[in-house]
Amino acid sequence: MLDIKFIRENREEIKKVIENKCVVLDLDALLAVDEKRVALLQEMEGLSAEKNRLNEEIKLVADKTSVIERGKEVKEKMAVTEPEYKKIKNEFESLMVKVPNIVSPDTPIGKSEEGNVEIYRSDNVPQFDFVPKDHIQLGKDLDILDLERGAKVGGYRGYYVKNEGVSLMMGFMMYAINKMMTRGYSPMIVPTLVKEFSLFGSGYFKGLEYNQEVDEIYRVATSDKEPTGEISKDNKFLVGTAEPSLLAYYADEVLQESQLPMRLCGYSQCYRSEIGSYGKDTKGMYRVHEFMKVEQVILAQADVEETNRLQEEMVVISKEMHEELGLPYRQLQICTGDMGLGKYKMFDLEAWMPGLNRYGETGSASNFTDWQARRLNVKYMDKNGERKYVYMLNNTALPSPRIFIAILENHQQADGSIKIPEVLKKFMPVAMDTIQKK
Image (cartoon, rainbow, N blue to C red; front, side, top):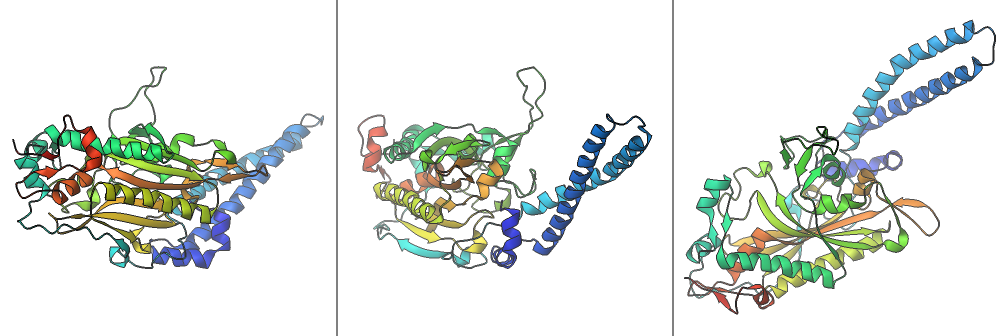
């Protein structure tokens, strides 16, 4: 969320960002509502001050009749102004959450993913001297993946990972966590069942509240109980990434500048309804409702140049992991029309997937500047004693299903076996170089 003062002072720049990010928002209408909101707020504050003054005056006068009459007038005016202010305030907030963050000067302008720009491509795409299989067939032949029974038990997009596949998948999850720790990231196993504020704050709702028609998030129907035994009024949701849980960790807190930059990584199960992707990638594990992921998050000082450097640091680590896993990949800089509302700058990594005969997204690194921190109210005290909102960045370290796909398909051998990347061999149950058909 942007500061309204910044929006007022940079009206034309924000209008351009709205156009470039393909956001449906009338900025002039927002600013008109803001003017009404400010006027009503000032009126409310004036009436409240008058009410307090009359409360003091009535204690000092003998004849209280005129003071009581004026008090009634103030009360009547407040009875009209207060609900009007609440209505306008809600309208203002509903529009404010749609205001996009500004973008970096080097962000490509484009309307869709077609406008994304490839800025790096590795040169290790495998050239098979046999007809390669996709991960579906490989998983079935090696008895490490069962999609049929996954759909029977879990429904559409359900799956079972089995046998050596479990060691492989959990192995690269542990590999990612260990990599993060060696690079100075503090690891966490985070809550995957969270309150509403964390998802709104991190930008996972399209509006002020959850909307099941557009938000790709699972809401939990069963209510919790408070320690008192009362039914909780908080809605609970399943996260689609560890990012909201990590970012909300310091919600409503003030950090010290000396603590920044703060590097965190979170392991979690992830749940996504994929309602906006109905009919896409219906076969296999590429697009599923439930998976595991290791996520990177950095809380930084309010310094754009520093966050650009930190974002590059995150991407470099992810590239290194793709290289150590022997995965062909490319890096894209994401254009305005394909990046999220709150993102200032964004890069994607995509691994080559022979079964799809294309690259598939395996990670995304985003700089939100203070857009998320304003929603979550995370600040820091600088060396001059001034409170500022932190800048927030996030990046996918490794996601389980797509890395699993990429390893199986890129490391398959002519005999149908899968060559295990060297960095993962220590996570297998016994000494083994390949996963063989039983």
